[in-house]
Length: 233
Image 1 (spheres, helix red, strand yellow):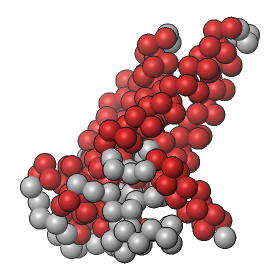
Image 2 (cartoon, rainbow, N blue to C red):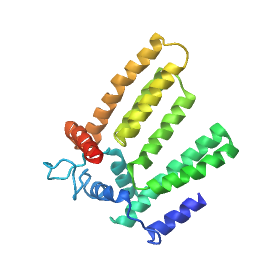
Image 3 (cartoon, rainbow, N blue to C red):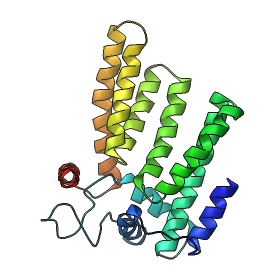
């Protein structure tokens, strides 16, 4: 945590500012902090979209990061975005530290946490930070509960992952399915659990997108696929 705070203090004061891939997300965060809308004033993956609506990746990161920025009352700018992003990352890393120490013990956790800290420092300002927070909630749930209520909570986590980092949501969905069928034989309960996820996850994705954003759901999905095709090309 000391190393993290030193990096944070140096970064927001201009000592080690680096314009990496996270710069593409900064206008979206500023826009949401100032206007409450998820628009990117400089680019959009859909060419016909002159307004620059956010139509790739997910919308949860700029919403959470912009809300954090407003919470601290910092002025709009690169340093303020970095500050709010570092605050989020530090809170999420602290949660991971507590979880790993509890599950693995302090000795084994001390080997993993420095690596995780480096990953967090590299990903500050990108959706993966917020997605990591959702992933932590997912890990806590599956570590403590195996019942119908857990299915409901895990569905919410996967839905939040999808509206933050869709690729990660796909991997976690596959991991969840494998985990369900790896315990004992394939039973009716396993199939019911999978059916529950298939119904609940899209429902939560749609409801949260409708409730917390002004995005057109189909346009957002189309933007994700078009952005993926652009990266693949």
